[in-house]
Length: 340
Image 1 (cartoon, rainbow, N blue to C red):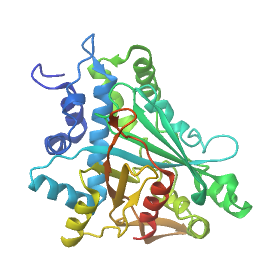
Image 2: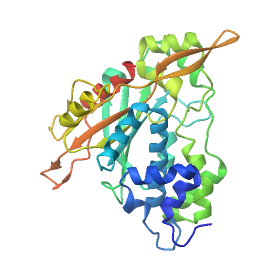
Image 3: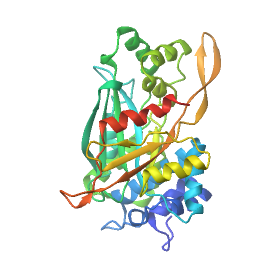
């Protein structure tokens, strides 16, 4: 049960992270969203979205030591993290789902839509044979992180690639159970749910941001890697956050400071066509994953997730922060998972 003195969002985060919750909440600037109260006293979709983002942010810090080092450095300087966006990758076949998992971004539209997000921009990534979509929150677009959801289009590759992709992803499960789906439907209908229902659904919804298919065969992984670093990354990491991003005042200055401290920062700052969005990233941290090799299981070191920094200027046409993305920037940033 919720203590009367607890902020609902903080209690939601603590229901999953326990003792780690306080440090994560202190590190990221989500105070307004975590404290948001629903009209009828339940958990609002703003509050639930903030808790989900806090937990996913904690997950990437656990998996990405370089990101954890950057956040620790910012905290030591007295700064809080402005969590700009989290990015994830999905696979879309020309017909049907991905095993039991809905196709491509559909697996996340059914989560993000009920929580108040909408597609604010679509970004073709032709060099990668992918499409990216930015999901922004309708109620709090600047106060809640966006989700950049990309789809890899299997039909744009050769038949051998398509067959390997089918073997790797066809056994994907659907992580959402009936209870979680009912809670999302209630968010969509009412904009809020009771606290106990939110607590029950939260870990199930968090589990959607993970790998849903079994360990791939090593030969299939090698074939995917030969055609697409991004497909190979999805084969080992699934739908986990590919990267999380901090909004900073000056990307170039921050990158130079982190480089001087010994962190592996990309040399180039990616600049959008408007000049208002500038971003760079740390190289992906390597991880060890297992593969099927005949009747054996073997371990290999592969690229994991990474951490990114971004600066956004005000759009003079609207007088508001430019929350858009840029296809060229995204293509350059995605290359970080080839550098581990």
